[in-house]
Image 1 (cartoon, each protein chain N blue to C red):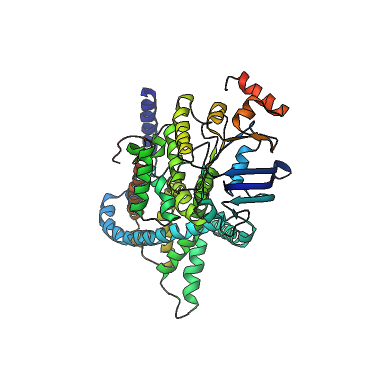
Image 2 (image 1 turned 90 degrees about the vertical axis):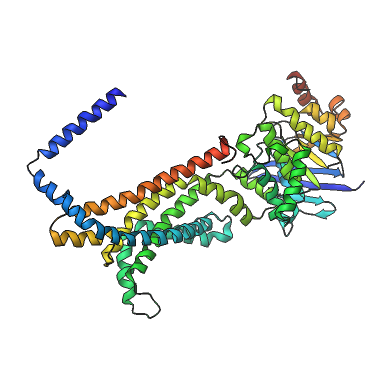
Amino acid sequence: MSNALAIEGLSKSFGRHEVLTGIDLTVAEHEVVALIGASGSGKSTLLRCINLLEPIDAGRIILGGEEITRPPNVNAVRRRIGIVFQSYNLFPHMSVLRNVTLAPCDVLGLSRGEAEQRATSLLERFGLADKRGEYPDRLSGGQQQRVAVVRALAMQPELMLFDEVTSALDPELIAEVLEVIRELAAGGMTMILATHEMGFARDIADKVCFLDGGRILEQGPPEEIFTSPREQRTQQFLQRIIEAKRL
Amino acid sequence: MVIALASTVVFFAVVSVAITHAPGWPQVRSEFFNWHEFRSTFPEIAHAFRLNIKIFSIAEVFILVFALFLAVLRSLPGPVFFPLRALAIVYADLFRGIPTILVIAMLGFGAPALGLSYVPKSVIFWGIVSLVLIYSAYVSEVYRAGIESIHPSQEAAARSLGLSRWQTLRRVILPQAVRRVIPPLLNDFIGLQKDTALVGTLGAVEAFQQSQIDANATFNFTAYLAAAVLFVAMTIPLARFTDWLILRDRRRRQGGGATL
């Protein structure tokens, strides 16, 4: 299996504070990788580094066999990687449909008609067809987050990044968003998700990485990480999660 | 509610009795509130007021565009753009610092005096230029406040979709920023409408200049009142229109009819 993404020795500091240290990670095509770890362990920063929203200090990022660490055109790279944020970040001044068609029109050069067709079929697929004319403020958090997923998918990315996409949601709305991710995984989408939903990570991921203090302390198949973690830090982290009844 | 009403009535009763019983009131009334003078001067002043509307309308368009350009210059990131940012800052400091009437006097009297064939001699032209220069400085600050009020996550979302910096600004940041600053923008435009009267100091016969001519001819100041009425009559519809725009935008985004 060829690698969709490879990260070699990635390091990143904010000022004097090193948030990521020597990250090595490979993601095969169609693979689903879950990043787990406490808040501040570097999960979100790693995702933001991958789609070049944060410049990195050292290391290499290789997307689909092509190095993208310092590309001549960042926009050309970003359109190949979709990201969904914790706080949805929909464009509040645009309808749902326009949110989804903006980038396909402006970045990929699709005609308005083509983009709307693509958007409509995606919205239908995720049960949002009747919301196409609505503005984001009038949708529930779960609906907004699903629109955000659709907006990223409309660019037909080769890799999707999910940055704690259920953390801002009310508990009863989490399931609908996880369902969307589950469906994408079933469809063979290559994905990296930073998540606090351990049960979901265990369920859906092919590989789980435990981040601690900006390092990947341990990685492996979910059964291994969740049932017999080698590192003491991983054990402690999972113990706390179990005590909080989140696993 | 009742107390507020009662106290308002009492307050205005006392003030109006005090004014109308002042020893100079009959003279003031005939010189400032003379209905006959008002009727005879109003048409002329209203005619001259068309020039104010013209100056305002032309200046407004240029200010909106030029100020936006300045605000965008100032929001450019990184050390490479430092000179442009510095230029925009110096510009805003300079033109907010000089009294409007001085800029109008310097350009209105100075520029035509150069005697260059390709420089327009019209004082109205230079009056408009002065107003554009000054108000762009104010309005660019308003725009900038709007741009800075948009959360960085909006830019991150747009850039992550592959939109360029410019596309992000044009499609995502500015549309939201401009909506947010419509009320303060209107405030500046009310100021602009009033300051069109300053172009009269160059000799252009706009409403203020016309009312001055009338006042000097009749020794009666009611003409000023006529001009004042016209200025107020122009700003009130603008204020209501802006309220309506804000309301419509809020309704469309948050509730009410989906047809809006």
